[in-house]
Length: 118
Image (cartoon, rainbow, N blue to C red; front, side, top):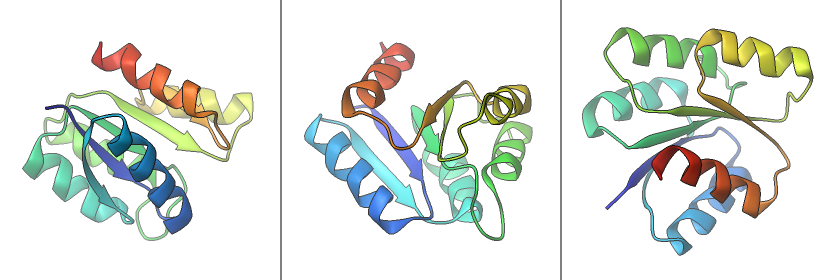
């Protein structure tokens, strides 16, 4: 079974992602904290990570940096409301594998996941 880790500090967005992805057959791990996201990525070895960029205490950029420096190599997709081209380029330069703008269409979410998980 394919496991996706969701790191999203907005509870409404988190629940939406959980509902859509579980309905499409994915096993899920989720957290509302970048720090906890790093712990789960290191301990549970998910197949893909969906991560918000702007979170309190530890943002998605720092969480990704810590994941990568500790050997996490799975695809990490930035899911964010910060949607300018500059924001997208900054995320890609920081090492995110892809970028999904909020609000997103369900088809776009599932399509980007399938792109990386095949």
